[in-house]
Image 1 (tube, one colour):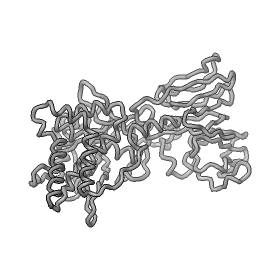
Image 2: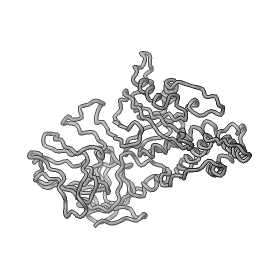
Image 3: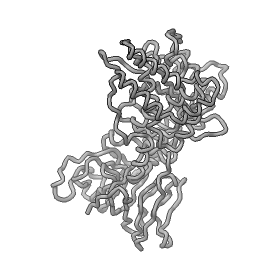
Image 4: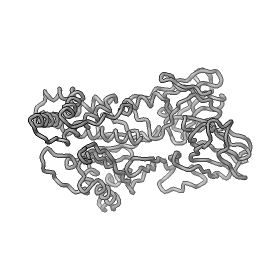
Length: 507
């Protein structure tokens, strides 16, 4: 029987037998967690402390409940995450083969609140006098602590925030006096800044970011930072703000799995922002990119991505993407320092983030979009494949050895992959074992009685007995069975089913 969970109840996973842990990590970096009452009953085997949150596990021997930790505030959910949404009696062990994070519903709700994704998109605002006044009121409300702090600072008139507000107030006065010119650029810039800070207002680090923004350059940078963070959250890349440190640090991290992270450094170059004056200084894309690459050196403590955010794109954003492709493909000079070479080897690529707006007829609206340019010189263990516009499915894989190793060698395991967009398949390794990977989408209906056959293994690739496997699925977890006759059967009421973890010895 499936139990529908209310918002306050944690999912409970029921262990099937005392000798079968519910979760098993794939590496030795984790630890075994035993039943709090029974000696020797392992509920989690080799699972890291940053892997499972907001779920309870019930011991098969004594019925005691292990309460796993609550998801920490301010933490990104992760690019490889399994959501547990219903009670499940385990018949086997779920292998965390992608170093994935497992969470209950509370974690997802918490992070949606912290990133603003649980809020409805703001209604389109007509930029008449009332609409512009609404933008000013929203900005003053959002930035009240910052505006108060600026009153007591010298040269506060040079700060972009009060300057934007004054400019819009002057525009309202001109319109009331009979003018017919609306300062669209200022209105959208102020509205977008307020939206960025409001969206992340419940993140634990938001207060620090607002306090830092009393400095003019910090305000522009932090506005771009939060805009980029929102764009990455919308792309389901799970960004996380970085706490302050004594040394140079990245601005964001992507917590792509339980133990793997990617640093992101955000650059908002001055030539790519709209100036206060009408004169725009033209700087060629290659020069801007090269400067950003140099300035982000030393800010990555691990593999990283450079993000260049801007409102103005000379020649269009694709001109910058093409310039980046050429730069990243060029050989470094013979006298390049070891630090420079190491920097390029840990750089996954560059993201260009457009924070401008576009005009459609007589209407204007925010135009937030991104371009991804991978770095061919990257030499790390993460295989990250992003769509060019970061607007669709992506895949993350972890190479088991040096880049370019033979991944189908019988002594190594296949890398992890984005199985929701990958066809089901299997391979034989160690001469007598079958490993299954990929996704199946069951086409049966909920009224179909009993398990449905969705896969058939050929002769010579079958187990000696029926074997049950717990695997991830659209609803959280489900059980699939490989029978001795070679058929793989599954619940016909489940949508997609991830077959990682199905591995058996050939009879």
